[in-house]
Length: 299
Image (cartoon, rainbow, N blue to C red; front, side, top):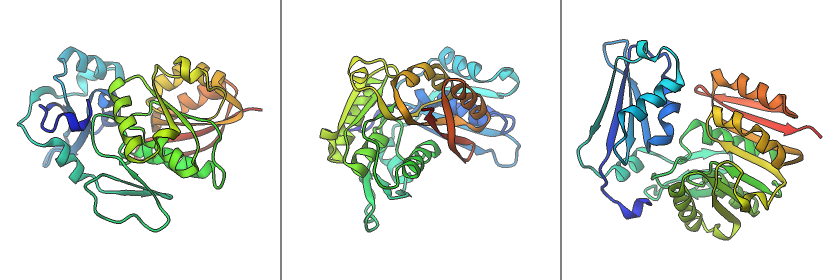
């Protein structure tokens, strides 16, 4: 379902009350894949923090508890309350769009259709509207990947890149528009692929990107394009660790890997795992508790 097919859907919210800021980033990461948006703030006059996630479909309490429990041990002592409720009918897409201003990362100017500001001269404009797939450019992990692309490829771009966990398609679109190359992209969520295909059409790069529903790099069509000289995976730490072997087999000698969706406290574990599998660190960057790693395969 794309945002055009449902202008005023029912929205459910998951409200997690925490006695402190401890564990907040972990809980945000745990809920990211089942929500269309997350917000958190300190409750005025208290040490408590409130995390709210918004869902298009009613989430089951056992599912939410399982996700949170799998993120941190001793969770019972770290959550004061958990509530799941239907919120009043509002045009959530429009409200989300209005809250998201354009961002400028390197040459990329990422904006929604509601933005009337003209892109800066010589910038690469990418239109991404808030919707059913992750990736509007406003999250630290997406910005980290865009910066990493620019760091690796000052002039000539990659020849055969793949975007794993493409979400809205923003990173694949950025590569296609920046370098005029063909990009392979996959996601395990069919809805995300629908959204990404539409975003590619809007940004006039449909012919440059082939999108596939795939768990990691396992789709036959994706395998037909190996070896890749660039693998971008902006997901979360545990799947990144699990995918190490897949990425190793799919990457070309001396190819590069950009990993993000990693909390700062998880970065060393992810990095150590890849270093044990023929990868070496090129650079790393941090923004607000989120880490982006640039790796290369040893020649």
